[in-house]
Image (tube, rainbow, N blue to C red; front, side, top):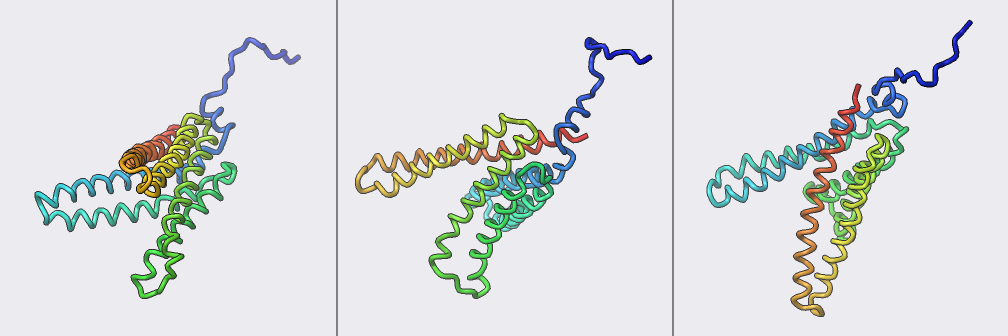
Length: 221
């Protein structure tokens, strides 16, 4: 005769089994790789920019190799999101990363077209910044979706803070630029605050990319 289950018996499920039941975390390996590439491309680019500023005063010959490294960092920044396409459909983030990559590709084509002799209307060229901004927003939303999927609401909250902070900084920047003749010195202060705020938000963005890829890797079986 079978014995009834003991309600006081401790569960034998392992942490790995619980994770497996919650989501296809192993399917996020490519996404973690893409985020890692993006993070290190940001670090490389920042280090190269700082190096070029120093080289301009101390060692001009170093500008050439540093420029080459910046190109590598830029290529890494382009390639990284393609690894994120491997995110499982169950994350609900597939459309966001596809949209972000399409915006990135459109901005790249608009920028590169004149270099190969293709004339681009001024209206289209002026929209490059807007397209890049939309692509960045979609990528942040992608990271927020992935954060929710791996049950990291803290990281999702950081993404939300970045989006809200970016909107506030853009408003301050517009007030500083448009209201220069009306607000006088106050407009300059607003512009400086917006620039400083955008720098802080950029650091927060880099930290989010870093934290998210590490969070995904910690769940890999």
